[in-house]
Image (cartoon, rainbow, N blue to C red; front, side, top):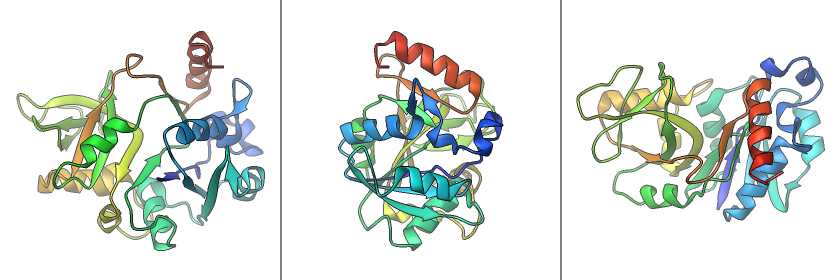
Length: 242
């Protein structure tokens, strides 16, 4: 299976370190974030990857090369940076994603969660993408809500109707069909704003929500800030995964 790993961001909250080092190369317990992620991809059966790049793209591409942890890597450099959905469309238009379902795994996270639940949900009729989610402790504008069948029906900080499941936090893990690309507008576009919200407005049921529980199902950490990275390091070390 192929995976797209978005890794183009500026890493603003990690400055000044990210003025010279791409965020995916920052150390997580002494090992680059991207390398730890690729170790998990390999364990989950990923056999090829596409990585997008923008900020310090040449540095990132030179450091990783054409393979990471034994997984061949194809590069999708962006100028300008295209956003969380635009990256998918760009890679697809370059012929890098093929014509089979593909994973999208954010490049700024650490996880040991299995992708098997995504594969199971993806097989349901009408599903264009299966989104891994966690209970959302502080719901905001991009909190996800589902119906009784587990399909995405709303985004926002308010329950859309009695009985709606959620609020859910998107984990940055998804399994998508090539048909997802046709839902992404050209140019700069974001997954929540430009793809998920229009789907909820149409109530087309194209996105399946796949709930995970941590730590029961495994570990998951958003590494979006120095504080979050430090907390992740402490928990990963305590779990004996350093």
